[in-house]
Length: 269
Length: 269
DNA sequence: AAGTGGTCTAGACCACGTT
DNA sequence: ACGTGGTCTAGACCACTTT
Picture 1 (spheres, chains in turn cyan, purple, brown, orange):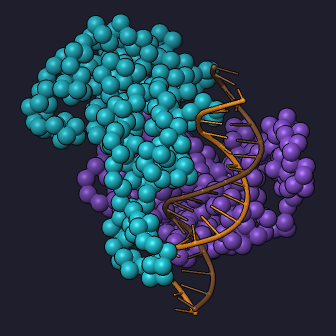
Picture 2: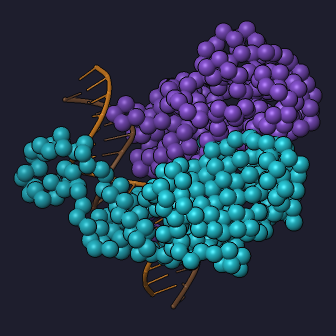
Picture 3: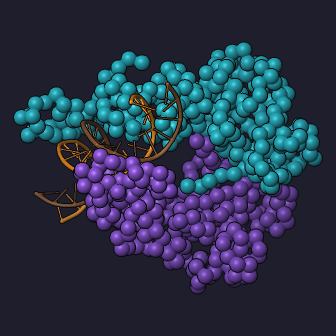
């Protein structure tokens, strides 16, 4: 990324002013409202660089001193920008080693988006069985949610997640075909690990945030068959929109969770 | 709060050393691992002060400069402690005015713990109808969750929340009687606003965090009657443990949500 | 004008990891 | 020994609010 010009509000003005001019500061104070703090601008530039793939997930980004030199600000200002990105889990700081782009390939982060925990016993990774992976046209609502035009191609995946051999989740996943060209049932099946890890490694799309809507529904005959339960049984329905850097929606997903032996954990803060 | 002695790791040592001594630093480096950063210690002291009610919800805490003087550290160190507490919603910063203790009496925060949003239309505050408020003995599980002894007194509240006149939630709430002496159905009914606002104002207990477990269940005849639906209908069951300052659990709550016209919203970050 | 939190800088030193 | 992020300090100035 090239060195971008920064907007520095009145601080900028001051830097260009000689010391004798400083006795008349604040002449541009009224303009300040339109500007954002330096660290926010730098945060934005870092997000843009991540979005453009300047540094891949798992890689180290330049050191704070290097970034400070690149952006022509102090280390403290870079630190504040990086602090916020680390708090949002876009970056991970490791003392003594550097700052790294967050990746879905890591024990700690791997199942951050899977909120099912067992009523008893240890949390364990699920097994995934892909039932179908088809290309189809986006309907109006899907197009709207994903920022596509109605009729654009999407990849529709259906899969079942099992814990200890028992089916617990049916996922219906919709991805913009333009971003995930070549994704197939074979690729999905041969890949071990979480789906977001695959999408990150093979297609360069890193999910960093999601919004969910939860409701309780009765199992249709379709879902009851897939989950091996009787129809009408209560299921937790989870509608998710996932976003990559810069808040671009890139995944639509509906999960039906069987919560007999698992629950959806959440923290209110 | 009196000025507490701080543990300052090797920085502390340095402060007591003359300049000439500084040529031999690090002699206590091995001990450092057992200490925590100054700003964490100050954060802890602030939380303790909040827990002890030194400043009430809605009130301003001392300015950063005053706190820096009290704790004998720089303003920047206080700032970092306060920043974290603001991020956790224990404090609220207001530029030009001061830093305030978060309160449940505020449009922005009032329904932070109510995650139900309507499928269509504007979010609106619920109406609460208290069905019962009784004193009873804690069973083993309740006692464990609330940190009580089995058999300790708890106050059991049942209420129905309605949106636009339609019942949507049945809440069963359990509170340690020792903390909420005198709480009655009358008080609950006469109070307008969220329950947490009442508990904060009348009993000085401020809820700052909660953990929830969500499952889908079939409505029992009891709940179906209360919600005006047929038995067996899917409901979203929400088990909550709420915590006050310093992570003390002070409320146990089970909600049964009717999600025909509302959904439980959640953000994964 | 005075006081508050917000931003930015500069420099020192500590803790951790690698070389 | 060196480079990384982590902590702490000190000082300057900005933005907002109240007096």
